[in-house]
Length: 219
Image (cartoon, rainbow, N blue to C red):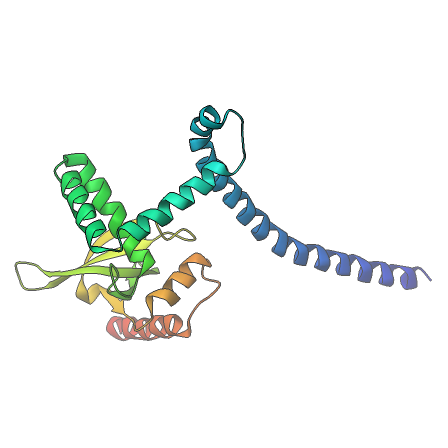
């Protein structure tokens, strides 16, 4: 009799736990996404609200954010024509004359361009590198290739952090120390952002081949 009562209760507990976990997997990412978007909205909106309050005389939520979006849109229209591009080049040349501003602006611009169109600018190829310690592999993006004095090719490799690929590490590595892949930059970025949840088959295949080569060398 006791067993007949416990079995249905266990089934109910398992079902409730499964439903709770399923709900958690949906609500946590959704909640964090909404929280981040609200944080961005409030940050941008709060920046312009004091000015708007003085002009209008009272607080209107969202106006600052709307004006910021409108200004970005108008800027995009301006720099898309010949006169706007000339003004942009003039402004950039003025910034490049200032020591600190030059590095900040140029670095931020290149990062934005790389992630806006990764296959066209910034990232040349996806590779696997031994990082952060011997025996481990991580995804990296070749950003430049230069020969050293002996003729060996040195690769500048950007190693992104997960799940935020806009920050990371710069490694300068000899070509024979990396595993080149044919993986697209978009697929590699999906893997980084998902924390490895989205993992293309080629990555595991390359690691398997690399492991076999290492064992053959040791043998």
